[in-house]
Image 1 (cartoon, rainbow, N blue to C red):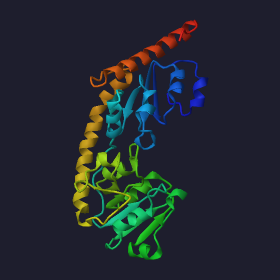
Image 2 (image 1 turned 135 degrees about the horizontal axis):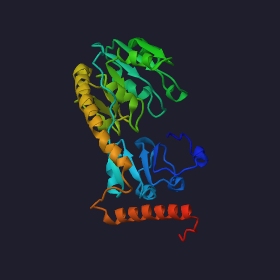
Image 3 (image 1 turned 60 degrees about the vertical axis):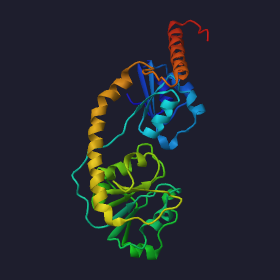
Length: 300
């Protein structure tokens, strides 16, 4: 069952064995009130705090992390974490052999002013700018830049297939944001064998090795890149995506087991006190549920 809003929780007349919250981080007290036997939190790297103090309240819950960077940090703090990396189905390479770029700016923190330095002064066969929201319409190319890049613009696609058709005519994909939770947009480009250019930050730098299967850059000081390697980088990105897809499919039984096993699952030899604390918190939550079910007052 998928429950899109926490306001709908109160209308349920049962307590689930398993509660999985995806992307949005509810407060620990809100998760406890749901009364699930096992609670799994699926945070996104781009919009979660990175402090031990914040995550202390989530001890006793299980965590699935789509970012290896976040997963390692949470494990270091004693949490029960499974890190996974998602790849969609990999398609046969159909990209163009010409130098054509695509950029879909979505935030004010990463706009055309960050891309300009990397692309100007190079002979492009075409460049597509997709503008869908006000946040992405800051610092747009001037007329001279648009003409030099043979730029096309769009603001909406009626069907997802229309967007993917544009990608198939692209060889270079510029990632749209500085940080990602998973990064579905640039991952879709990788599985199509495009050369992805992205900020050197999670989760992009967990999928891309600079100069090997894509380009990573510092948004604060973007510099010119070697565009003669685009085809080679795209080929290697596609090969890596094939391996990543295989690993993702093979990880599904492990993910299923992690979701269905009791909380907490693992021990962390480096943080025995923290893990013990998490187990005690999980036990306290279980006891509270038992007291509520029996109708007796909970002594704590």
